[in-house]
Image: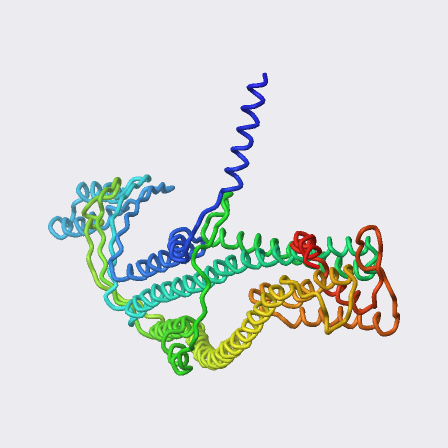
Length: 527
């Protein structure tokens, strides 16, 4: 039983480790390859090309003859027959006999008896069955077939242009999602580091409040900063989840539990191409303009097709009777071949309405193309200005980074000086506890002022930190000049010593760092 429990625990641990480490490192080139293979939008665009090719083939079918077979079974109420009275034959014969034999009565009586009857010739029975094969080949259609073929080719080009636009759009989304995920992961790391630092400050604030060195407001201020950092961390993690899901959808990996880990580094272009290059690209290779131009070409061909309705259609036709029952071959020929035409002389002004509609569509597309060109020119100016502004912001942030590096150097120098036993401040005589406070408080003050370089270097926003620092300074400035409190500083050998609020002000600004606790005993021995 115990062995089974141990195995179950080991299996659970292994499963947890596997789930925790279920990550897929992926470069941008590899993600682009996956995008071209499995993206749903690109698959839909490919189907659009296939549909356009099928439509083109359908329009090209007008060039070929049509061949069709027809069959019929007919039941008639009466037979088709020829009825002919015999009198029309006997009367001329009787006249001829009388001319030879005027007094003949016997022959005349026989002829009269025969002429009173009717001769019946049956042609077809009541049930008829036929199976025919007919063919038709249009020789002239007024130019409709040429225009239709041109429209079919243009539709294929339009579908390919739409596919290229879709591919460019998906690649743009991929770049935003991929590098957005990389940036989000780095932001999470910065937020975590910031939260841990503020958490340490809050812990130090609790210790100072318990020792009576700061009031409740100072502790709450540290707590508020820690809570804000925690909320920012949670927001960054949620943003990373959203970007991760978007990237999986683009790469058609939404059903997998593995998280994508971008490996391609972030980059920045130091220089911009000339603006003229973007203007030339818009006029020559913009997807929207190309699509509007192709649609305008289709509209022109539709105008020509509508105008061809004024011309006749000439066609060659033929018919072959494969099977017939009840119809004699001498009554109906089995093979027919001929040529004919159809000419619509009046159709209720339908042709004129189609021509007007096609011309209006063509004019609308021409105006749309002009407007799109103007909008793209404005968009290029706007985006190029934004790029230049972004470069200026980068230069300003580089100055901020340089400032943070200088603050880091000052912090290192300050720690070095205070760590070597600076025990006096401008010739003032201090007690051991006051010296301890200076040794502990001033380096912490330097840490508080200078240790923000990591956050500044990664986030690039020094202004919020300076604003917060100024708020702290002003808060304690009011306490120092207006409240004039005298509070205990540090406990040493069971006794408390009191000093001025200036020392409390320094201690409140800095807090006590964790590494200073390890140095506290050494500093006391040096004093």
